[in-house]
Image (cartoon, rainbow, N blue to C red; front, side, top):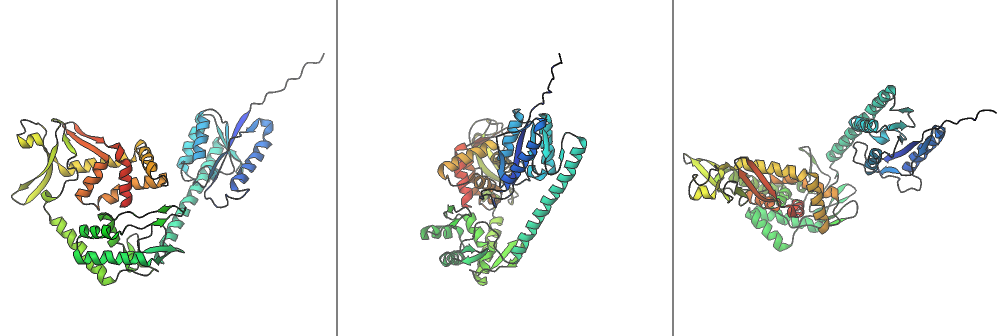
Length: 446
């Protein structure tokens, strides 16, 4: 009686196919680049069927996503499935489909190793299970990263060259112009509004009066349509937006790129003599504001600061030395009304406290949970606004802040800060989380 033959059991290797395309060009075709990548990977896995390779049914496709970072939905889902033990091997058509960053690749390989997952590039014939494979991968990825950085340089050079030719390179067009074929084209109705703004400022020299006149005349910021076809309606012009409009060199037929001015291809709206008169007034206002005593300057944290010792408000105040030099500070009301015997909290230098609070606010606005809350609040009122637009607006606090007068700074802070408690142990910021959505809309107005 002959012995029974035994058949070796081949372990199964579950293969996840990952595909990516940088742009959305051609994705609407019946058979696109992602389909071609997946079909090639399937053919390779089928050729390894005797080794126990099996393709997973789930698709991990990232259409129109850059390989320069890991913020891709399908890739993140793939990493979660790897952590859950659902994947044994990741198969790509080419290495740069997975990533074009050497740093990101090292993170991915570390994650793969941690869960005993191999990586295969079917057109480059290597995997990460051998030291030679790792070396080859790193060399190829270095070239992929170099190619990405070179492409970025070319894009920047092209942008600079286009600006030098006076072409419009995207963004919100200025009031008074529309965009056609990458050129600014005069919008006569809005151009008349721009001339009115410049003439009115030249006549009265008061931004407050100009804004009042604009409200009465119903003149607002630019209404425009995004590349996705979303209509963005204009909003009332605030003081910071007014100054940005008055300083926009597009109105005298110029374009600026990296602080270098070039002649534009568009028609100017404002005559040079009117522009010079307005900017003479702006410069004079700047000198006047800088010459004001600090004690007469409104405090950005007014009515927000509380004493951590007494629990009462700290009032803004100022002191003089020799009748000339002055400095600002916040003082506990109990200490101001009686003496520091009643409150041991010393006066707090205003500039240091304001800088500290602003730094805290900057960090708070970058916190993921705060960003998520802001997105929910804004989308509840303006559902057409995208997450990217909301995040971009949250990052506008810094440039907008420097253009605001202290009273406007105080108004913005009150949208986000309930109170600032100052104690001997430090400063505690209590947030007004319901104001996030309003803050985003305020930043959009600027």
